Image 1 (spheres, helix red, strand yellow):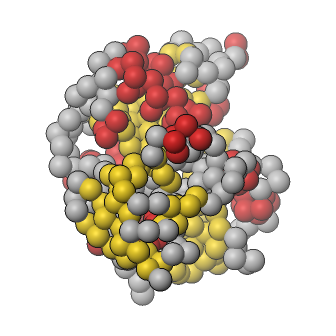
Image 2 (tube, rainbow, N blue to C red):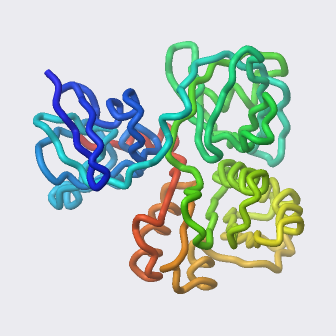
Length: 345
């Protein structure tokens, strides 16, 4: 049995099986709904149920609370339809133009940029053309079929058959323990992508706020590279929040980009600067630094990537306190496997 899902205001329709998540059906049929983790952990796919009935699978309460559900909100990544459904959602345009590919890749280099951060560069197969939007991510497929997601840190215009990723070590993590322990050059890995709806909307000339925490810088770096390659000159402020100076693992790269590109301003923010950092820059929570500089965000677009608490706090405060339209906030929440296990049914 299948049901019809209609997405308003675009009026796009597609069919979803009764036991299939709405998002999975949309991806399969090239309908670009917003999403991030696909696991009920980040809330990026949240939208409004206008008509019909769905049943939710396991998900985090922070992604969809009981109050949200009572107000008619749904998570398309874990909602299966029980009737024909009408949703209200910001539709992502042109996602379907890039096919999802599964392919082997070869490790070219592993460069330790901080105590717990590695920049991993992968050689893509010469026989396949891998296309993606700057800001999207891929999934590594482990030997037992488990998957781990990481954003591309290089724009497609500058990749030239090489993919750059930024990985933070999660002690006990099955994939990052391998990366930081036994992985070596020329190893073969399997991945699939591209995925995600986190990329620059180019049908606007609104000023841009790029907001990153930790290795959330990776897709932000790709977006900056894309803007440069495409000749886009929208006024852009890049805020990067880390705990200490040592965690600003690509500080020199961002400084050089800001010096080269007249439309780009860089504001690093440390939440836990130590005396040995000799830090004279901004301190505190990175999203609060944005609000201090830009108390009126009503005419901006914000692209936020990093820890779930930073993303959710920025979304809440920018909309409630700075007048940012909810539809002008785009996010990719970096949910760990531990985050994804904290689910409700």
